[in-house]
Image (cartoon, rainbow, N blue to C red):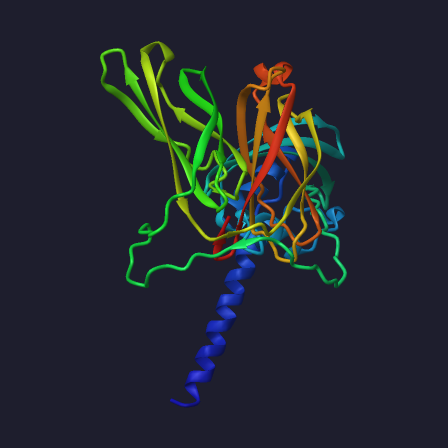
Length: 364
């Protein structure tokens, strides 16, 4: 029996290796450029990094591990908590040796659907079509000392047995400083800004109740993630509250309720926003693009960008947000892009960008 067990283990290992070889060789070579892109994305959707990489062209100069990190995430970034849900493809240009294929991707993530558009170059290689999948290389930041001189607020609680929301101090004073009701595609939307007027930080949210012409409540909603929840003293955040399938002519009045609770907070990590500009994306839609710079010494795992758009009179006319699926290493710029309503692009006179960030074991 002692001699039989090693033999069985060797046979089992050989069978597993053979099965893996059969699986990898069973992938059908792509006979068209669009077929190569769809085959690669189907393997990504199945979370098969090895299978997907077989459709990556050697001209990409992308190592298997780099491809896997790019597609499935690293450092607890948003892509780590995402999976490819839907995609569609369209051939933009094609000849005998190369083509360009546009892929519209929709990722299911912990914060909702994240959409992306990639224009991929596809080349003929080894009698089949394969995808050029370049991975953006991150610059290596040299070792350095980053001084820590940010403000920080701590809270001394009454005891471990207290409820999370129970506090023995006054809540921070917050105030809605602007509010603009708009209607978009059959939805009623409230836009505005809220300010922390106090000398202590607060966790803030904005709730709204719609009252109909008969005096009855139509709907109640909150700002959810369309707001910077943790506001330091004197900080201002945009907010947006969406009421799906509610028309404006049904509403008699709106009751707004700003809420705040004292929380520990700090002014770090410091986030820089650079090279902001309104542009058009590959599909011709208006977008706000720029770069984020993490100016602290710790990695920001999930950045969340909020943009407030103003008209020439300084009125808030729209609030957009978007999550960046890359983590922010210290002193390393990362690009962001968030959508802007095409029908409002010509009315935008100025805008302001703020950044929420999630760092492991801490939300700010």
